[in-house]
Length: 178
Image (cartoon, rainbow, N blue to C red; front, side, top):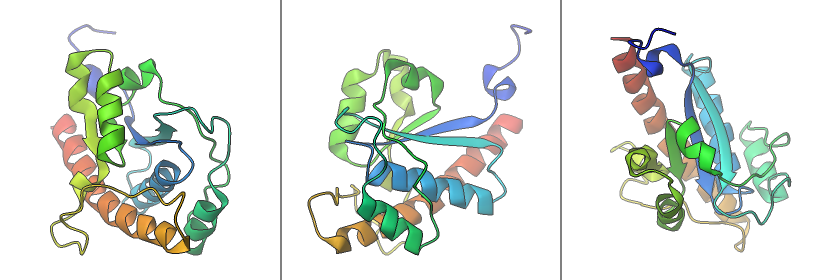
């Protein structure tokens, strides 16, 4: 490869990692929602999406059955996803590591192997569109210990924020092509 070639333009696709604590509720939901929205936007071939947890509590497990059930009601299939833990290479391999809340963002910052990679760490709700009814919220709450309503609320937040994230990705990809 020509060393003068920008690695971002020669490496496809753009990579996004959704991150929560155990990778069985929020981040797999966000992974499926973002994939769906990218498909609808005609951007699925340009952006790769994965998810992981900051902790290894559930490595290899499928998403929580309640997450799967609520996601299925809205047309998202989580059944093939399996939990994994964020690893050191993820910080280099993904262009954005998207945390569901401040605690997981802090954990990512703490574990980030190189200071310059810190600019890749963001919080999902930072992408909420200004017109969203959820504007001003900072964290996707963990529904694991709550009731069924929590899973629907997570989907509401994630769907809204992923709309803004798709817009952000569209702009970033346009800049790369320019």
